[in-house]
Every structure is written in C-alpha cells, then in structure tokens.
Amino acid sequence: MKRFLLESSLFALVIITSVYFVFLQADGKSDPFYLRTTTPKQSSLILGTSKAAQGLMPEVLNPYLKKDIYNFSFTVAHSPFGPAYLSAIEKKLERNSKNGVFIVTVDPWSISSDGIDPNDENQFGESKSFMGTLSSFSSKPNVSYMLNNYGDNYIKILLNFSLMEVHCDGWLEVFPPMDSTSVKSRIAGNIQEQKAKLKDYNFSQTRYEYLKKTIEILKSHGKVYLVKLPVDTRIAAIEARLLPNFDEKIDALAESVSVPYLNLMNSDTKFTFTDGIHLYKDSAKDVSDELGKWISKQ
Image (cartoon, rainbow, N blue to C red):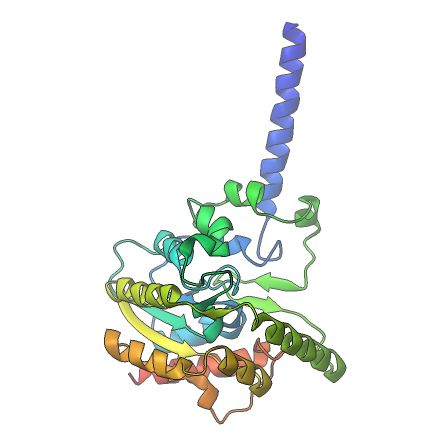
C-alpha cells in the first residue's frame, strides 16, 4: 500500500511539474489575452476593446509620452466599461503611480449592452469571464488563467504557431491575408454581424457611469485622454444607428471630468483596416503617431 501511495504521489508530481513547465512556455502567441495577465503592474495604460488592442502601438507612442505605456485592451466582449474591467484595471495599475498616462478609447459598443436590461450589472457577461474572476493580472505563470480560461489544448503552447501575437507591451499584432478579396469578405461579414447585433444591444447608462468612474480613478494616477479610433465608414454608420448621439455624450463627459477628447473619425488620413473594424498594422502605426503628436501638444 505504501509503495502504491509513493508511486501515485511521484506520478502526480511528474504530471504537475510537466504542466507547470508547459505553462512557463506560454507567451504572446498562446492566445490573445494571456500575456496581458502575466506582465508586471503598470503606471500607464491604453484601455478599450480590440480596436485599441490592435490599433494603438506603445512603441510609437512612448517617445511622445516620454514614458512607457502598456496596452491593456481586450475585446468588446471582455472589456466594455463596467465593474469587471474597472476591477481588472485596478489590479494591473501600480497603486502608488501618480504621473501616468492613460489613453481611454471609447465607441458606442463599449458603453452598450445586450440582455433584457442593459443597465443591470448582473447581466454583464464579462463578469463571468477571466476579466471578472482573475485575482491577479500580473502573475507569471498565471496558473488560474491557464487552468480556468485557456481555451485550447495545452500542447499547442509548445507548438508556438499562431496567426496573432501579443507583444510584450500589450499590443496585439494579427497576421490575416490582406489581399482585396479576403479583406472585402471580412468587412462584409462584420457589417452583417454588427447589423444583427443592433437588435439586441442598447445604450447602457450604467456602463457610461462606469466609464466616468474609471476616468475619475485614473485621474488620481496621472493624465487621461479620451480617444475614438477610426473605423470603416460603413461600420461607422452602423455604430451611429446604435447610438446616434454618441459624440455629444462623450463631449459632455470629457467636459464634465476635464479631460481632452480626440475623435479620429474626423481625420483626413486614409487608413487600412483588416476587417472594417481593426486597423492594419501600418495604419495602427500612423494612428498611434497622430495620437502621440496630439497628446504632446495638450
């Protein structure tokens, strides 16, 4: 019996050690989120959905900001403004930071919600995801994330092949085919998907208030800048149907909390999108450069 228990314990130890070793190999190619849960706490952050995750490059912004900023943006499903995202931000933020820079990107989807009552926090789906359940966003390896939220076979971590990569500064680089046929197909798909979502999504005053609360908390740690990133004009038209007075709401919010607001939909620069929503990396560089210049003049 003792021998059986000893052999069982040794076998379990080998399994645990092997799994832990695999977790240590996880990196920016393992999935679109994991690396952001393992890097150290930060004093400056880029916040928002996947538009910001792919569209704003810290390495371009840093020279203008004269400090390093980290991209802590996720997706419209994981990081709309609300209690879960605010809690994650507070866990990622250096508690004693006072001279940080915070770029808060906004769009109609990030202050809207589906469900019977768009203002009911209990119906916010992201609270049930890792955004609402992880106790730490700066643990390496983040065992809790890997055990409860990694959605693929662990062996793929060792294969290290992916069509995307989260860089060490949080920027998400994707590698989609950019021929005209592929791009048109993705844009058409997103147009149909977003039109369908209009039936279920409505403006959420609760999310709007959480956006305001997030800004007010960040202001105690540094300077905050509100930004609306560009999208394809056809996508913009759908967003306008979701929330026709979005710009007026954000203008009013920016004035009430005394932070500058840059609407890049008004830019004269022509941008390239991978799918009508997300900036291609060359345009992400251009937008980041334009934003950096604007911040440096504030």
